[in-house]
Length: 100
Image 1 (cartoon, helix red, strand yellow):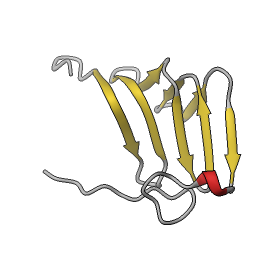
Image 2 (cartoon, rainbow, N blue to C red):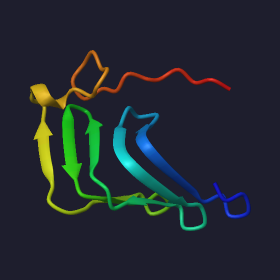
Image 3 (cartoon, rainbow, N blue to C red):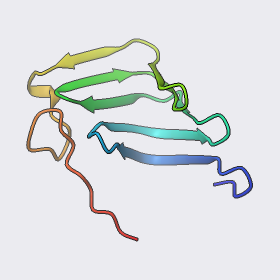
């Protein structure tokens, strides 16, 4: 994290879970605080509401509420592959405990 700008780069097994239950997995995710933009050029998998979307990159503009999955996209809706890892229901991510 760059303290002055609040920009962040996450590497490794990156998993983000939104308050709405969307789960995003990738190996590299960057955040530009000024632009309110998250992006990666690495493979990405998103689980939400019984759907699984896989692509070769992500560009999310949070302030504009606009997200693009890049590259060749594969999507599954409601099938057996639509369960998020660790989830008891298809497409619903199991919340991780928050420690402070």
